[in-house]
Length: 316
Image (cartoon, rainbow, N blue to C red; front, top):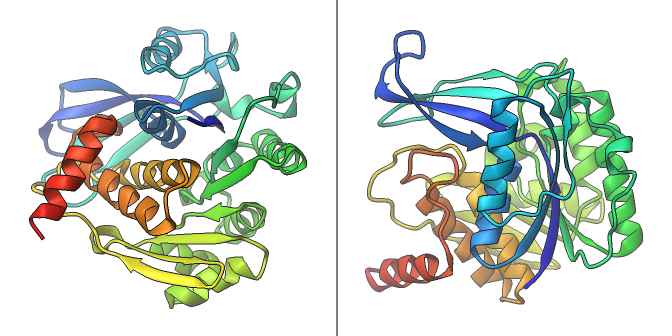
């Protein structure tokens, strides 16, 4: 199996036990959140080795997060603590349909104070892949510089790069800067994984092929556009195809579905699967993710994934 590197901001997540606005709910279950956390857990459950770079507050939530990562067999060699800043936190609404309300307390968090010095002692030996999202560069100028440096080093070492825009407009000073930076970073990757609305916003194009061509023109090899319940559109080295979504019994929580999709696509590519099978795996894990309450509870191990895909395909 492959050895993968990622960087992000893990957060303590509190999910409401009852439906209703966050203002009214008074009981919550605790989880660990973060796009890169979700990706890391998903890859680890499929048997890949993941090393996670982050900075946590020296507080109970930070210590719990490190233990959680370790319990999920994620390498925390590059997880560090800082005394002057707190670990980020989120509160999430419980909903039956649609996207939940999410409130974050992450401004000036420990992770937002990462910079190039955070990766000064990074040893690239043995890494096959790095997965990046648009969240760290939105946290601070220092985090942004760190991400650029990671990409530069990865390219110099011949390490494959996947990039999920994972847009968070509320973390950026304005839309124009967000689009400029995210596109600049995405165009340095080998695999880009935007959602359809993200692709429209970032490229100004409405057609999936035109969105893909925008990134191909910059040198991106593979573009996989997430289409929600409709599946995905893939364009890679002249090959284009649509992938259908997998049936979902009940949508419990849509947060984390895109991260699960990335797990499927990236793991499939790293394992040498044909691209169509890798994207189908992504659609399957995305479907499993929306049927569970936490951001990463529904991410399957290999047996669970194979069973779900086999049962789903047998019904078609």
